[in-house]
Amino acid sequence: MIRTCLVLLLGLAMPTNALALSGQVRVVDGDGLVSAGERIRLHGIDAPELRQRCDPSGRNWKCGAWAAEMLAKIIAKGELSCEAVDHDRYGRTVARCSVSGRDVGAQLVRAGAAMAYRRYSSDYIALEDQARAQGRGLWSGEVTAPAEYRKTAKRVASAAPSGCKIKGNISAKGTRIYHVPGQRHYLDTRISPNKGEAYFCTETEARAAGFRRSKR
Image (cartoon, rainbow, N blue to C red; front, side, top):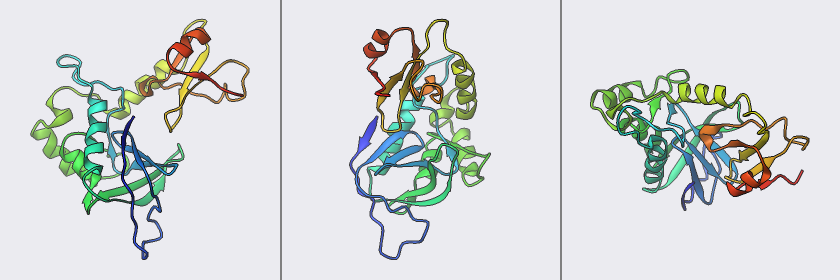
């Protein structure tokens, strides 16, 4: 995980949908942040998943990690403020964020580090078109849309490998925990390989990969 120590300062006359967050801001991926336990998903953009790679026929570079680094650099430039727009199905706050008055989503799309999430917003379509035309960032080669990448990863994760039923899960805070059949949260745990989660055949394998056993 990429971390940056910033304080989110909000004025006394903040709007009702401003996020009252303070303390350390942690970059989760190219469009996600965590601060004071609040998970934030940037509105209107879709960045590559953290483990996603781009241009498989060429450089095969770690575009997901690069997008997260770009977000970290942007929020390190000044004061971060966010305005809540909605909540998604994962319980995250969807928000428009800015650093010293400059729209974070716009900066990412302009640099080619994220795409306009056209399913939910038209705010950044023009910026994406410009970045694509100029071959910036993700548009320098072949790239799979993050939404399509997630669908593929979900299909792959829908069934455990034969005999390998231990689930290695990574929480929003980055904690790596594995669940074995019969434990309380086993059936509710979903595995997403694009997040670094995995199935294991033995507990020894899970521990070797840096996961600890769930306490219940």
